[in-house]
Length: 336
Image (cartoon, rainbow, N blue to C red):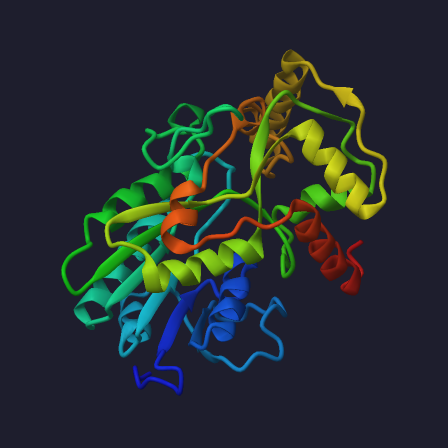
């Protein structure tokens, strides 16, 4: 791989997790912005999210130090989206190996290879969330430490280590997306909420809420961070702050379903989460909802993207448009 610039003056950007939900949207945003992309993919994995795109492909494991060094050579930038997002069982050693160790190994390899910019995708939950009237921003402390979710813990650890690598000649920027909807959600991940609401499988809503973002807006923000992000800085890439009641109503309207009308008491939600955790310990199968996940769902996880809007030109998308695009993608594949 070389860093020879194309006609726009922009070179080839390595994207890890390029066939994932965010990664595949980042690849499209890069191509639309005049970059070339090299997609780093797991061996044997086919999601169909990159079909028809003119991108170079490199297959291998980021857990392999030799592969990490190879994919970094000659790049004009690296966007690292790959991560394990499993939330069960607790304390998975392989999660830290990928989310922290492999991420740092790749960043160090990129620095050694003379790559000028490295954009690491973190999580908005690495910062304290706030109320709708005063949402959290990049100045907050670690908002999710008390919940004991490995994914959030490892993303925070990786973020702090990444920022420490920023130096003259090696610009490290961390972007922190909130909860995303949109197309190319092949697993699906967040799209499970859309599918469940469309099928009438969500009986009620809890007291909490989130910042709901359009994945395409987030992907554009990632590309903006590649060119304009300040080294050693974090940028929350969020969307609209809605309670679960408001979000479920908006999503249900977008897919033509009836929204759940029952507000679930906190004690009932916690009991359901505790049951899910207990059953998973017995069966070894991941729960649909664990106790830790339920505790998070009772919180108002609201965030402010003003810094990204100011410095990156970030534009928050529409929840309705994100859900409509996701639903269309699911329908094309017979999932909805």
